[in-house]
Length: 227
Image (cartoon, rainbow, N blue to C red; front, side, top):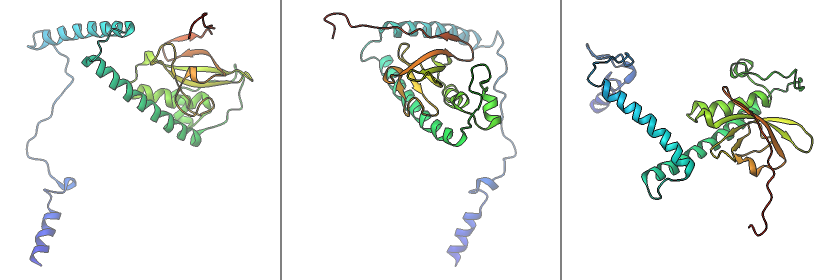
């Protein structure tokens, strides 16, 4: 009985119940975002690093564009791991987005180009659903929310070649020449694929909140003797 009483006392003790714990008589809090002022002992050190970091990132982009990462280097290992994890994350986005699209799909009777007003992200959440023009924003915003660079993420109007119907998807330009397709409703593809892997669909226009481009189709033919 005594052992049970001691156990009960321990279980009910405020020291082990976080919800019942009381604050100490004094504690410390911080204001983290006070503007730094010249003359602070760290001011010049931080500004110097910021400038050099911006320059190094620009140089890093140029190195990647030229394919000059050294094999076996930390830079190469970092890029490889980051790329693999981004692709896994994007694939998870496709699965979750399509699950939500099955719940929140709303047919829009206005299918003509002039009358079909595309919803904003705010509209989508207020209306609690939409057709592909709105549901595509789930994938688009997930990529941005979880840190994908906006310069690599675009919405795309895609034409289905056999009947001329249009569809909206998100393109992730990990490869500037062959982006990944993230399709919220699965009308074009049920899983994340390169656009080159989904024949029969032609992109007409790509855009995001800041940029807008027309897409021109290029025809390639194999040269004699090419493999």
